[in-house]
Length: 137
Image (cartoon, helix red, strand yellow):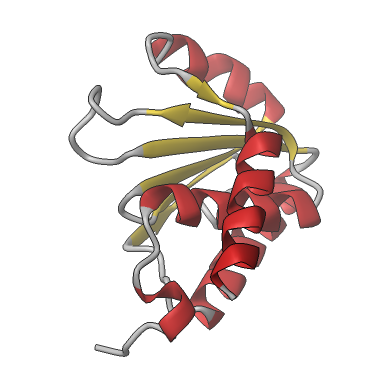
């Protein structure tokens, strides 16, 4: 097993989620929603849900996430749906990323299904993690 780079070795779920948000925003993901599932679900801490404008964009978002996280040696445990591009799921352990083509997102309505989960302000999350990283250096 490859060792994680030092700066990513102790990534907690929130930090990993913030990294995913940053990558998704850079790749022009639409309608990002992060749900805090801690205490609600035992299989992950966060859901990151986003939409792509087309099936190709959905695939591109998934590839951008996988490539950048792989470069940090934080690989997805599993992924589903990449070839179709309608709904891609990336299981990163503490974070599960759902990338939907907009029609599929409406149909599955994960936000409605997990309505009890608090939403995380992704802008505040990025600011918080950036300030923490700045204070560690």
